[in-house]
Image 1 (cartoon, helix red, strand yellow):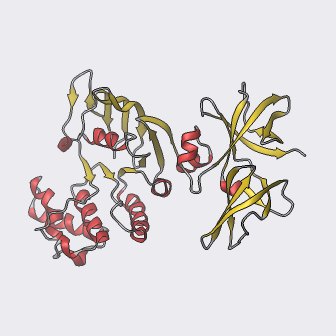
Image 2 (tube, helix red, strand yellow):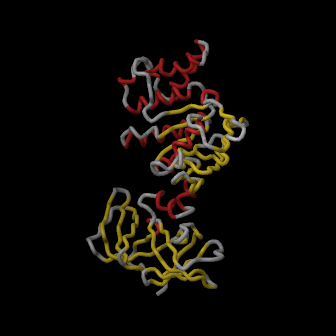
Image 3 (cartoon, helix red, strand yellow):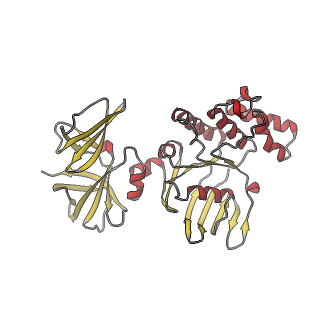
Length: 370
């Protein structure tokens, strides 16, 4: 399977820049999710790699072959890039059986009949759809249609499989099941998967690396847990995580022992994990909900705004001097509206952001000073 490299790739429509100077390397056998809000450029990026969209400038390499180079006038057609594309609407032929839908592409590629039969049987077994081979798409559920579409895409043995929000038409339960199947499929096929989604849960659970984009610009390209725990900027921190990260405005001053903070008149000290050479006066403290620890002896005090039990865990909304913070606690708990809640900011995964640039300055811990 090949490595994919994008070098200074840009796509413009008139004055609108869909993708701006994108540089990234997709490693062999990886599962990459292109994540971001609607209109961020993720689908355009996928289509440019696949050859369905022509970049305005830049260079794309799949394996050891340059498939696009604006300077040299190279633009290999999608059919010659040896990639598979799984569309959002599955695009199955309604008048063909499951078997014929899967075999259709191989017939067009002039495979021999016995080879077609063997390969179709292989992918049907892989996707557990052998019992549906004589059915038509209208006789299948959404999940079964999804499996047929994947089988048809995998049949020609593409080097790379592209997927553009393939689970968006499924209900929540089926989406969860199909996420499990896709992750297993990636392991079984040893293929490179490139997957577009706006759903952060899909990105977090499926990917080996997440490419998070906004307004056509790459915000962070990292492993899912690194994107979650060490976001590059305020946009990444806000987009990834549910409930979202708490953002506490503060003023900061660098001292010989750390960073002194003033949060709503509360004095605190930030202990950074790495050296911060310079810091502006205005900062933002990023705290994941799991780092707000509710306890009777907590040094911070707020009022219960609302309690949202969800079975295994409960999200507690805390009003801290007008700011609503989210805390996640395991188990079923409940608080009356405006009941006093004592809590602490615990752990060493607190993020210090520069307010003006939005960039992350350091991870660290917070010590509340009395």
